Image 1 (tube, helix red, strand yellow):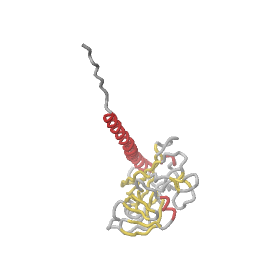
Image 2 (spheres, rainbow, N blue to C red; image 1 turned 180 degrees about the horizontal axis):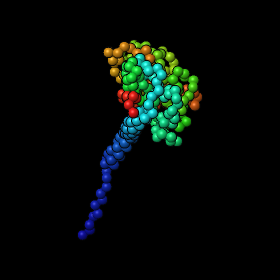
Image 3 (cartoon, rainbow, N blue to C red; image 1 turned 120 degrees about the vertical axis):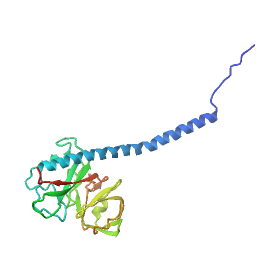
Image 4 (spheres, rainbow, N blue to C red; image 1 turned 180 degrees about the vertical axis):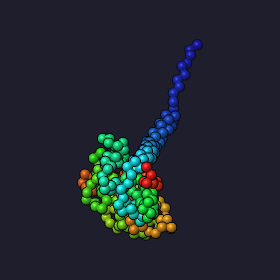
Length: 251
């Protein structure tokens, strides 16, 4: 009696189905990987920003403050220190590191006019630059470059509605480059908002302007970097703004 060998194999339909499932899987991985990478990077930046801010507040309490204006009406730059007692490398993280990517810039406003009361509302901008050769615009001028990002003050905007602003100067139309967002600070109240979208000269805030404060005359923000051609390049380097009340009268 002869035995017949039964041949078994996948049918063409099964092979095509398997190939289709594999293709879908590869597409899903390819689609999700950039999103996962972006979320991981963002989470890492937020975590590092909190660490940088903690160090910033500690250093400010250690060094104290020199504020000849003692303004209660607007925020002043903390590093405009008349005695120059703080090395500029203190404002990068890790400090005095040749590989630092993070930096911080503090703004201060006195809480009241009492000369004996040295409590200040402090806002710390934490930023990151990934290109060591990247330059950034300074405030007050759009022609000079800075090694690290610094807040720029601008009054070149008008309100279209509580949530929409129109930029009235060309530089801002290029320097404000979300995504994911650009943080802005009202120079008087210190309220923090985010620009979540820019369409030419019109920008969208993350929420309506607060009704209990008037429309701002000046806002502060971190501009994008400068490319090799001297033009704005890349997304805004700001990560987060942290705030704290510091009593500089206490040692």
